[in-house]
Amino acid sequence: MSKAVYAGSFDPVTKGHLWMIEQGVNLFDELVVALGVNPDKKYTFTREERLMMLRDSTRHLPNLKVDAFDNQFLVNYAQTVGANYILRGVRGNSDYEFERNMRYVNDDLVPTITTVFLMPPREIAEVSSTMVKGMVGPEGWELILGKYVPPAVLDLLKAKATHR
Image 1: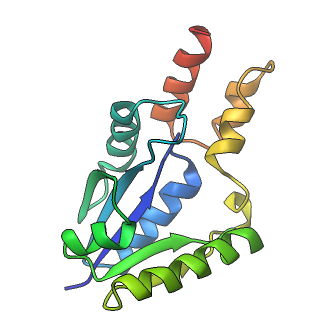
Image 2: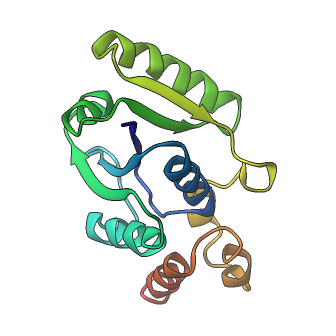
């Protein structure tokens, strides 16, 4: 049985993340979507909100589990859940450089786990959580961001924007 972990901060979940998740459920017998928590990072959404966004956006997908981890390397987390693959997305050169280096470090730590890279389609390749958060505010932002995030995420973004 093939089992993979796809991890991220998902602050917020984007259609790029969903594309990766949908590819993962098609490629592997089981996919764990893991919310990584970095105590040094300032998040827009709470851990609970990010988990809720992930669950709401993926509930239609089979063979998928949403989980969270903190204070451990991704490859070690993957090992604890019995995964033999780590799924990572590469949008461009900077992602490639970072992910390539992490793949080598992961191999040093746990050589039995293989990293699989996917490149998203052009129309969502530049979508990132940072880009999404940066577009909130100007007139008409809700219409634009609806193209880049699932409905549950757009609702949360609207709610946060009205509480500013």
